[in-house]
Image (cartoon, rainbow over all chains, first blue to last red; front, side):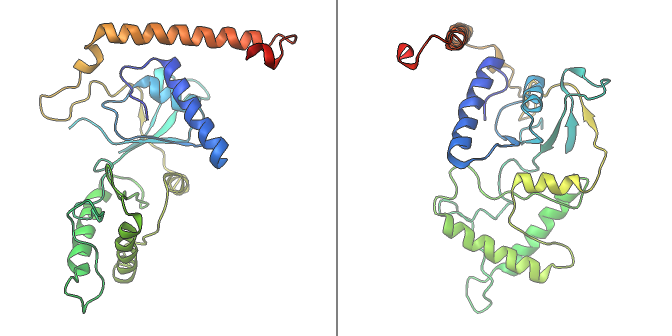
Length: 65
Length: 196
């Protein structure tokens, strides 16, 4: 779960590459659900990122009061 | 609180880039009063009527009320209910004893209204697909975030510019090196030894 306001695209990809490789190597699973439950605000970039990674859905929790 | 997000205004294409988005109802927390972990203060769920700690009647009413309110904000009759919070499941068995009791009690006493099962986000999404709902669509972003009235998280996008510049610069060097490394790996004459 990365922050969505400050990081640039390349680093988000790198972050997910490392995480997904670990999950694939150790559990043989490719995640298809995003779990962005604690970043403070949500970006268009991130929606595109999850969509392009082939995710089916994502969850988040923080929405304006 | 569920919709399809199409970023970058890609609304008119034949195969738009999009992702299904679920906004959780009460953060990533358990229903109120149902924090069964060893580090939390809520009483455990007890089904045994002969026990002094019996509370399933009160707790189930609380849970029913919470879920009924929550249901008004979602379209389908499948619902995801989270358990846990930061630093929970310190002693997972302890937590699961309460959840087992809750599921047993609810499925016995509220069978005409609920069917409780252990599940995962993927199972929930699979269940939603079967409802064949046409979801609303969102195109723009969710910034700046406001968690209290008149309070906005705009500063953290703009503060510490020097540090952010440093991260950008490092990141740029890192990804450039990664590309050079990859290109040289394509050179058939290079062996694994010459990389090391």
